[in-house]
Image (tube, rainbow, N blue to C red; front, side):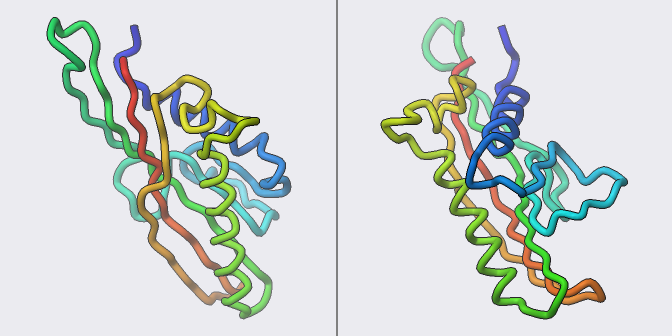
Amino acid sequence: MATSAVHAAINALVVRFETAPALDGVRVIDGPPPSQTFSEPDRLYVGWAPGAEQAAELSQEFASAGARRRDEDGLISCYAEARSGDEDMALCRARVFELLAVVEDELRATSLAPDAPTLGGAVLWSEVTTGSLIQEQGPDGALAGLVFTVAYRARI
């Protein structure tokens, strides 16, 4: 029996985002940025956000009498980033919110994807709960970043 759903939830998010047609061309990264540089202007990190001290948080409690099952509430740090080669901040800001919209859609149940919020059965439900916008101008142009949290509940 698993001791936590964090590992399965992060894996499921990475796979879901890597295979989402609406994220074609977006670099999906599992965890913190590796030392290599990327040419893609749009990136989506799962299990990492700039300034975050943790990749995920969890809390557990007994699910019912008998202590046979546990409920786990988790928070997974994520980060979406859009860059441009010029100073057009509005364009980057609009793009990073487009990326967040795709993430939210990927976590919504539909008739074609009824298991979307369960991440294929890894959790009972998941959703985007918080976000924080970052904007920067640098020598490589504008950057808009959106730190956000995917919350979930799992039964383990």
